[in-house]
Length: 266
Image: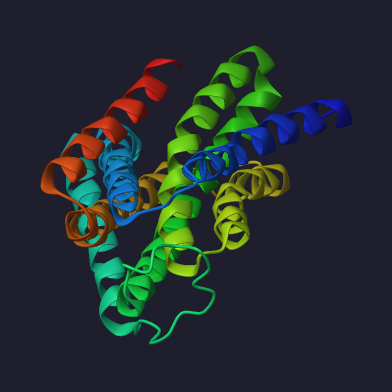
């Protein structure tokens, strides 16, 4: 394995992961922030997460598990992993208390109450964690494919970068509205994308020696469940709370369309 090949593989994986930061910047383009704009961003984020979970992540999980466990047990383990992820994030949501008084309210609209800011902050952190978990095996796969065939790895990295952009919006928008800090929202959004090069590092160190289709499949299934739960329990209800019903629904569809386009461009 030549050092130039390794550096190339790390480089394109890092670039794909940091595309979440581009999404974060897009969320800040509107100077006059308002609850209605927040509702649109939350609905968009829910659309992104629901679509990518059910159209990309869940099928990948089932494919890996069927390959390893067979046609009978593979689908069952996929479903168990999916609801296991929901159970995990629901437990965290139940037992982790919201902060009473988030700091740094900044220049965000005063129409958002302190309790709502606390909920948004927790929502953004949970979303960042879910996306980081999702990005980790993506980085692993991109790195290994780059080592094997750079011509295949480049379009894969481009596609991952494109769908990381709306994921960056999903992280940064609620955190910005919770804290009023563009810097904090930007860096946490970017950090969720750093799971991609971290996955590449693991790929370099172990080169899939200890990674099985079953482990990868169950991880993907759990992440799909986590992202669906966050979307239905946090993002969509909050979008309805901050804006009109149709704002939430139209932005939900827009988020789905953006993610669909990014996947089709592969």
